[in-house]
Image (tube, rainbow, N blue to C red; front, side, top):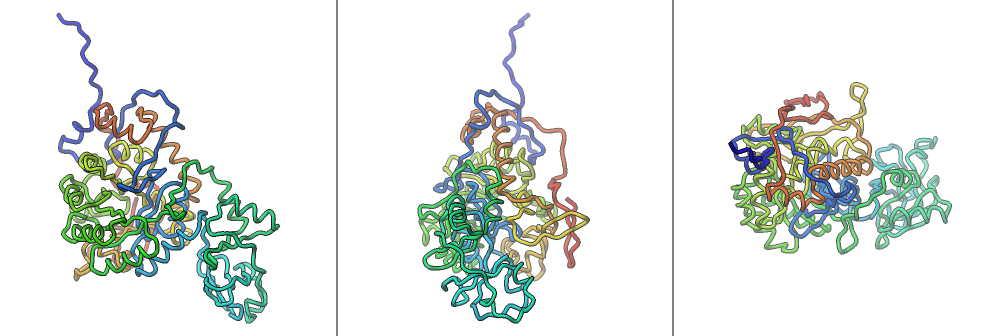
Length: 507
């Protein structure tokens, strides 16, 4: 009788697990621990968004109109990640959002409003979303700064018929647009001032006040280098569609300083996108283009052959996306990421795992299954930097969060993403909900990053590349996870009653 110890065979390789005919979500699989010989703090999460665009942090903010505008773009870039500005606005507005994010080097944006000194402000609409009204001689950002009016001072002003020049505060000390928090703080200390005006090429960019500087300095220290281009500006991406007028939109964005473009479609393997990829590569050869969305190797191969520099993976996996239920098309996100990554890496094309991220464990799984970055919507929605105002619902402070396939978003123009802009009837592939207040991404993203590092440590991966090597060498082992949750697993998504023929999220 042979008592030789059999070879150890524990768990499944990814290759074996994902070829059994099942479509797995992140919650359907679990990694087995491996060998540790390094500290969690030593894990290197630097990566590439596209062939030519490196990131210190593998996090991307999704091009959704309740997630990514100028404040999110500046914050994500300062953290070492990047945001993709949504296209659910006119081209000129999208370009302005991009310019605002790139016009400073601190993650503080007040989106300032301007007025001439002779202006009379009778309603707070003049302030827009800003806490200040900047007073210049021309009433525009191109004028000379004469002073400013805080919204609180205007509120306390008894005579609203006065000109703003009669009660404005004097202009604060200027600072260059690319001044960092330390430089701004030094100016405030030396001038004994509570504000600093950021200027660029003779124009006022924004007003930074002491309270905001102290708020940001109170967050965890940023250890990753910011995502900055050769021109010293934050790097920002933007989404466009595949229609003829999107070529004009792209021109606006390129002039505004666009760093990477995402062709935004729920199903990217179409003649429209293939032709748009070729157009972008021909007209803007220095601009990297991300194609998608795809979930199969066949879809990915077509876009790779067309010339994409990155692939966005996911179809119906987001917490507010209902494509799989409505159209019966899609794929479990874990399977999709693994399958697409297994072919994309052979061509040096990074993969963005888009959707289905509701905790740090999902991020570990996405990156370990071959993705180079994760794109997040609900994970960032509800943050201070997300667009929209906070409201109270059932005693909780929340912000609206909606899928770009919801009827509400489609009325703003996102129906082109689902190739439905010419259809007589609009079919929703998303819902509208609300997300609890999460505070600033500058505060919770550093903790998320540390949790991801600890996950990588447990599987024995000291870097993102190391995780991919373990996956492809078959050393990384997985099993099917018996405990499963609903596909739309974002526990922070709340029901929000809204008028119209809309489904309500029950998250």
